[in-house]
Length: 317
Length: 94
Image (cartoon, rainbow over all chains, first blue to last red; front, side, top):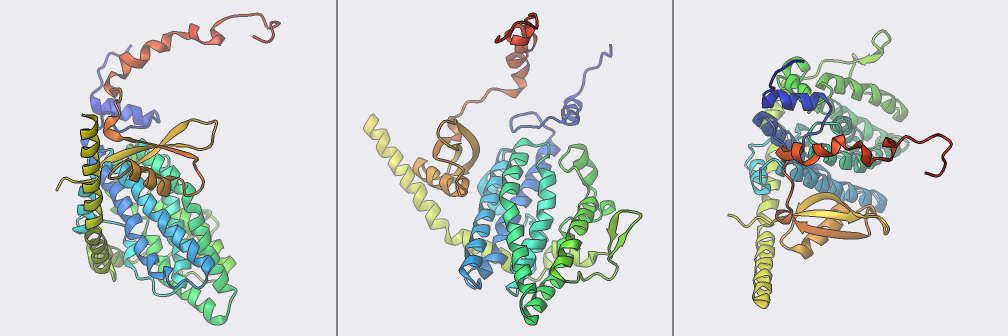
């Protein structure tokens, strides 16, 4: 029998390889903890900032039906942000620290929310493409190794499927409408297609964290695999709408059993990541305003609760 | 500034007859607000008929590094399971 003492790192890796989940109080390598704080909080920030481009259209939704759906979707996103912040907090960071990282601009969130939503059709395209891309990523993450993150993802995926369907329904209505409405839908697809493709992150060869993330089962598929899945499932959906995906290189490859597609504009990708997107500045400004304007509510509630607790303590004393 | 609202653990009973189950956590200034927030966050799609909230710091948890001594002794006590006992196939209702 092999007589070998495993180091903590090796024992940890063995648990991961056996398909065990890691829970909050378990021993974990510091880098596993830090990677998760970064990834889960970026994900949470994305949900929270993601409310802004859609909030932009709530008051101008074309019918009550569309308005209640959009409101419900935005409310879900606030909830999803909360589930994820809670998961990050199990790793020893506080909510205030997380908010500070977002508001100061040090933390990243998904670049997709740094594009503007200029027409009602964008609510359709965002639900269909952006939520569609997010769901592909999130379904994978329901199997991620860190328990609290995986559980948040299960809850999120359950709630998220209506988001994509409501977006696609908006596109469908526009495409079955007047010429002008269909043109609006095509215009939205033209603007959102490539940014949605970029949501899966850099190419595998430019993604230095992928190998470690796969080893720790943080991710179970690479960026390029997920991107391919997105293209394969979205092309037939565009055909049903009668819209054209803005990629002249897009065509079915019988040999691979997948669609081939054109090269992404990686210069634009890195430029938006670095903060030079159309809406980076406005998004941060709006987040900071929301935080600052809510300060009196947080303080008042805290003070009230403290005073009530004091009163109760006196009564029982 | 150290006036962050405390964290609460939320337990939801999905319908009468079933137990409350842990579903997540949230921040709230006091118990009443924790219940209100839990209602908004965790029961938007009729997921529950009753909510319990407990401040997270009130929970005492077992230590995972002691899992060996805590839980392994049960592993070699197969005689606590019905399948441990050999009975002839003709025996019914047992």
